[in-house]
Length: 152
Image 1 (cartoon, rainbow, N blue to C red):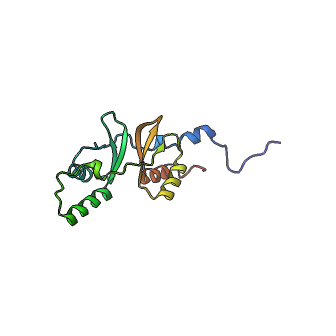
Image 2 (image 1 turned 90 degrees about the vertical axis):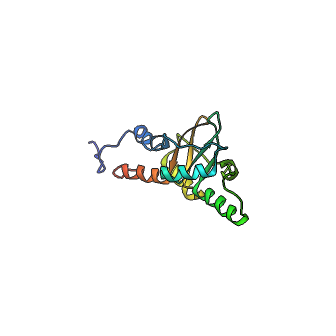
Image 3 (image 1 turned 135 degrees about the vertical axis):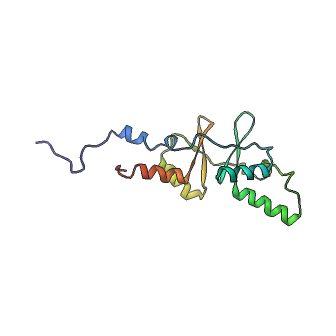
């Protein structure tokens, strides 16, 4: 006599795991910044693109930092306090240089845990040492909504 599961047939576990990888839910068309770019230019791009930050890459497209609205606000505040012109300030002067990244083959569950433990809003996604995308908290929430009928 065969035992029937009340849960129904199970999905192939390898297929199910492949659906929840960061690489399937990350943004790949990134707005990036250059270290020598003007901070004012970066602010304009953040506002026009309606994003809160992005990766900073060098001429070889290697990740060298990340810039955010908060970094720009810090620069603005210091410029006002010290009465310094903002026109000479570069992205490299205020970007975060020690960037926490996430691997493209991490699961969205691992990414969610990193978001919760680090309180960071976005992670550059790396594959074999190269920048291949970016994942945000919003991307994770969208992935969860897509999977809401699946068994974790």
